[in-house]
Length: 139
Image 1 (tube, rainbow, N blue to C red):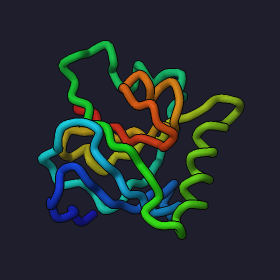
Image 2: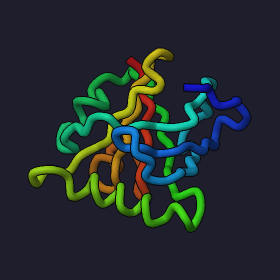
Image 3: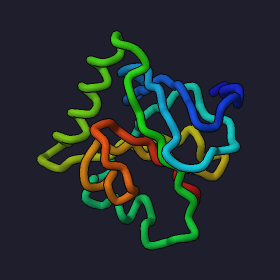
Image 4: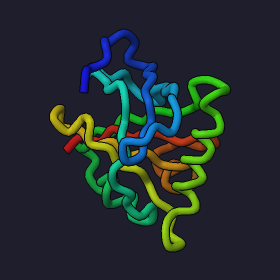
């Protein structure tokens, strides 16, 4: 993975993949303080934790854990269909359980990345919108 040049900490564009298959390109805007790390050019969602366990994998009970939240939108109209398909995939989940997406591209920098659909789990982080969010959580 090649690191993305670090320009604006509040914005980030990347390719969203599921098990190496491109779903869409996303434009991300930080909802919190800037982030002084290089952000990846793509996120490959390789695991799908149960969304009802978001408090555990986001470690919400640990106030010293750093979480940087980005609102995700399709980068262009051409990406809207793939974006909606992936969002719906997370909401509908597997075996009747809504899911989050987990990506490991930033693990060498000490962060795990979780993609959450809009809803209760995202609201726990203060997000009230209708888009997906990416949460960069420190270890």
